[in-house]
Image 1 (cartoon, rainbow, N blue to C red):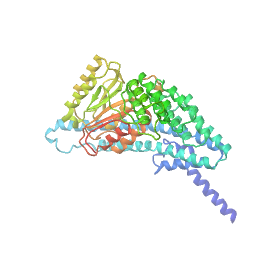
Image 2: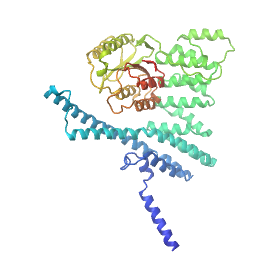
Image 3: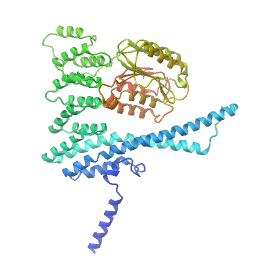
Image 4: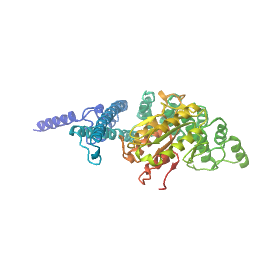
Length: 505
C-alpha cells in the first residue's frame, strides 16, 4: 500500500513538473504562452530562484549563463512591439481616411458621429491593445534584472568562500557580452556585491569597456566606491573623446573632495567648451560651494585667495543646474554645442505658434558655426528637418528656419514619440566615442499627450528616466500646455538636471 501511495505521489510530481515551464522558456518573453501568463515576472523569478537555490557552483554558472535567453526574448519582444505598432498605425490610417472621406461626402454632418465598419473599429482596438500589452511586458525587464541582483547578493551570504570567488568569476565573464544590456547587467551584479573580488572585477572592466555610455556608467559606480588609485584613473579619462565619459570622470573627481581634484578640474576648464563647461562648473560647485566664472583664471584666483591650507569641506553638495551661454530659448540659456530643438506643432499650438517659431529662429541665429543642431517638429508623428545633427552654418540655419515656418499646426500630440526621437540622437553609433551626439534638448510642449503608443504621463516620465540613465541628455522643458496635470514635464527636466519653464506647481 505504501509503495502504491509513493508511486502516485511520484506520478503527480512528474506531471506538475512537466507542466511547469523550463528555465529557458520562463526567461524568454517570446515563448508561446508568455503573454497569457497572469504574472510572467513571478514565473521568471521562480525559474531563476530554482536554478540558484541548489548552491551548486555549476548550476549557478549555468543560471547566470542562461540569462541570455532573457536578452533573446526581449529582442523578440522588441520586434513584436514594432509589428504591433505598425499594425496600429495602419489601422489608424484606415480609420482616419474613413473619417476624412465621410466628412468630404457629408460636410453638413461634421458634428455627428462618424460611422465606420465594424472590422475597422475592431482591428484598431485590437492593434492598440496588443501594443499596450507589449509595452507593459517590456517595462517589467528592469524590475526583473533588479531582482536578480538582490537574489545573488542574498545567495552570496550563505555560500562558502571558495564558491563565492567562483561565482564572482562567472559573473565577470559577462563583461565580454556583445550585447550592451548583458554587460550592464553584469556591471549591476558586481556593483551589488560587497566582496573585494567583485570590486576588483568592476575596476578591471574600466580597461576593457569601449562603449562610451557603458564606460561612463562604470566610472560613476566605481567612483562611489573610491578604490585605491581612483584619482589617477579618473584624471586619465578627462581626455576621453566622449563627453559622457569626461563628465562622469569630472563628477568622480569632485566626489573625492580633495584640493588636488579641485585643481585638476580648474585646469580642465581651459580645454573644454559646450556642455562640458556646465558639467565642470557643477562639479566645482559641489567641491567649493562657490559659483565662479567659467574661466580657469578666475577659479585659480579664488583658490589662491583661500590660501595653501584650503581643503573642500566634508559632505557633498547636489550638482547645480546650469543655464548660461549665448544661445537662449524662452529665457533658458545654454553653452551646449550639440542642441536639439523639439517643437510641438499639434492643433493646440495654434495660439502660440507664431511666438514659438520666433523664439526658435532667434535661438538658431545664436548658434556658432562649430555647433551641431537638429530640429524636430511633432504632432501625431515626428518630422525631422534633417537626419542626425548638422553644423550650424548660415545655409543650414536658413534652411532650418524655413522648415519650421512652413509647418502649420494641426493634429494630436504624440509626446512619447517626440521624446523618443530626442533620445535616439544621443546614442553613439555602434558605441563609437568619436560619433557626435546630442547632449541638450529644448523641448516645447503645447498639449498633453493625446496620441502615440504611450499616452499616460507617468509611463512617459518613467520611460524617459530609465532610458536617459545612460545617455545623460539634458532636457530644458518649455511647458505651454496650461494644464496643471503637465507636472511630468517638470519631472523630466528635474531628472535630467535641466530647466523648466512653465506655470508654478
